[in-house]
Each structure stands twice: as structure tokens, then as C-alpha cells.
Image (tube, rainbow, N blue to C red; front, top):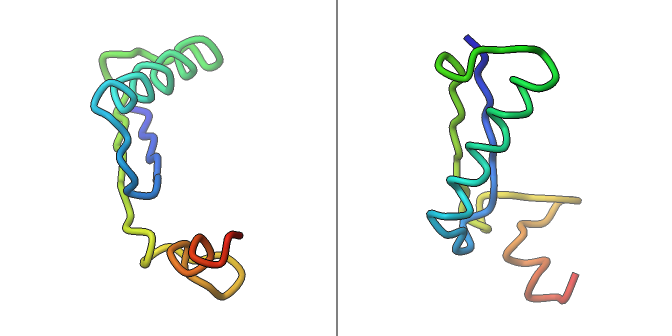
Amino acid sequence: MPYVNIRITREGATPAQKAALIRGATQLLVDVLGKNPQTTVVVIDEVDTDNWGIGGESIKARRKQGK
């Protein structure tokens, strides 16, 4: 049973976009590894921008600085 975990910042991904990610990740495992889509699990975790950091700064702080 393949398990895919997608982490994105919580910035308004729509239900349709999330559904497309789930379908796409599932299909990729089918196409590349021949996995059964019925047993493929895809989880999307949305993380607040103040809980996600790059280069010692949160995404929230970086975006305020225009980075």
C-alpha cells in the first residue's frame, strides 16, 4: 500500500486543486510503479506559514520582506 504525504502551506488551495493533487499522485504511482490505485493513500497536510521555515525564517516573515 503506497503512502504519499504532500505538505503545502495553508494559503487557500481549493478543494478542486487538492483533488487534482490526490488524483495526480495516485496516477503517478500507477504509471511509474504499477501500483494499485485502490490501495494508494494520499494525505495532504496544510501548514500555517508561520510554522514553515526556510533559511532561518518563517514563510510568513519572508513574504512580508518580499522574499
